[in-house]
Length: 340
Figure (cartoon, rainbow, N blue to C red):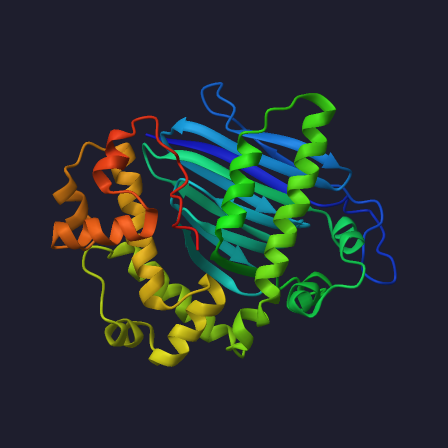
């Protein structure tokens, strides 16, 4: 059974006049959504006017589908912690796209005039954090935006509304900040101040990631190359047990190996091989926590024909063996070293 939630986002009143520099001086972030069966899935926290944080920390979910509609978009920093998410989005400029996110994926996005559907699979825990800035507050935070935000700022100021979407694996420092947010021990105003400091920390860490030579000074490919890299990523996620070779994957999406690796480096922060390995081991972590499959079955389902090789790779990635993780019944939804 699929449970539906409708989400609507906007970042200012349609009648709010633009100032000469295209910023909205009185805008607010307004994100509305429904619940299912009386259960609240989202907790929305007002950090300050024009800035909201949304926490999602829900147990075993039904097959959840969220239909969303974004008119006047906020700038969003989104962090997927425990679940795989598949989004279908339609933008008037770029048309229809399908994007998948795995545990450990972070997104920086500005998506005006966009609508679509986000699906979360049956039985998966739904844990995540997101930040949403109205454009006025974003430009107040970045009074003189750094070079690494140039493309995002161009999208914000573009009247055509082409939007901006950048996805990559978040690092250990970001993972720690997210854990601290979800484990906040405070209440009331102290809690709000704590979340405000953590929100700024997350933005700082994202900026540091982007400033790292803009992904080591790799020249940006064109949008077609990036779309082909995203298509390749979805193919990998759908075939973790029997993924195509790098050459085969390149041929499937119609791009050469160098451009494919470059696109992965820009979007996901790593090579095709490392992204595949991290996705396999992240899925294995989830299967260990959420299913009763044997270790050999889990190894096969993520593409390891040899259980000893699987155990070695898993321990190298997480610092624990699969058996240790399986015994830890309470579990930690954050794979400790997967988010790199």
